Image 1 (tube, rainbow, N blue to C red):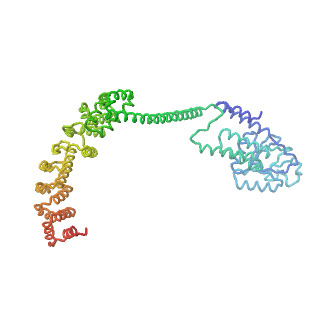
Image 2 (cartoon, rainbow, N blue to C red):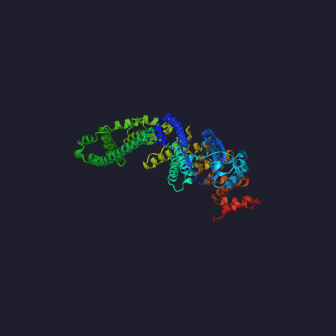
Length: 573
């Protein structure tokens, strides 16, 4: 078994085993390195070797060799019979070439000034004693009686060692170093495809790691908590989707069945209710039939919806007969329970049912909802009280503490018109503490032309709320209350700008000749163009007297309002 296989076996055992494998590998690697010398026979191509160092200890020779490799040398180790390890950086066949190389090294690297040439064969065999080229007389050579010379590695051995280093680096995920070693192997043997394939594999792995950086590298051959978690999540997701799909299908089927049952019940209820109202021969038995069909809350709810839709179009005896059936089937109990529910949408259903059936027992419960924070519930309570209070349909305005929104006002007005309800005297609520109720009452006075309330309306010009005053001015102008002209003129100088415009417009609608001088004064004294324009329009609407006042103003030398008056009198505009 090779040293690398030994290390792979050790590598499968935890962190301690890996550390042990490191030391074993280093020992085995050093041992194999020290025993793999190749013999250079006497017929070898090179005879002269450039030496930069000699060592007795092999490890020191290896360390020095690595240092020289960092300096761009290509060193290798030679061993003599005397067990000296020589660090050689170049070899030549001719002595002169070797000498040139030594001179070059000494000039370029002063620290290696002791570089020398080692001759492969015995000195006595190469030179005669009288030869001037004897090594001990040559400043480049040193005498050394060598008979045999060994080189530590040849090309194949270096290739094998570099491959081994690369595999070791890759094994311990030192991928950059592994790529460097494999590239060195490619340089030694370009025709060998193994290092190239390994470089591609390592680069592909690094690319996958960068793409999947969120997920750690996992050994799928072993049990992993992450894989187990992912499997559980996947299974849970699939089961959840299946359960959700089943629930959706069941719910859809339930809705379809409910729609079919609703339609069947509607047809049955409509037929029975019409028979009850208009077929005197079956009046006694129909309540029992309906009660038998309406056996649960869902069926009773459908019955209540049909009765509510039907009573809207009924009046007189037919409506009273339907209410009797409502009581016989105890549907009034269901409506009262709904009206007292804690859920606001169920309460609204109860309010509507009670209002349509004219059940007044729950009025106090409805009045409580006038102060609710829920605007929809509050509006439904208002509408229900309007329908239920025959004597005083708008008494809810006396209890209203929260703002009466424009949407609520619109719904109340729509109910008055659509149900032809008796119109109350809205002057009653002009003194309400709720400003929104006062504004609503002013609008209703204007809509229903309640001119008899003008005295109370005029008093609102003293109100502290500018919106109430503005609405008051608008209503006085729309009702053409001439008695209010003097009050409007009096409050002109105390009002804000928006209300000033409203006063000028209102005086134009009132069209009383007593305000002509006031409007002339506005044109003459005010600097605001809009006020001047509105005053000029008001004078124009007053007929001949107003036209004369405008013509008189045009005779003035003040050019500013002359342009305004011409603009107002221009019939093309």
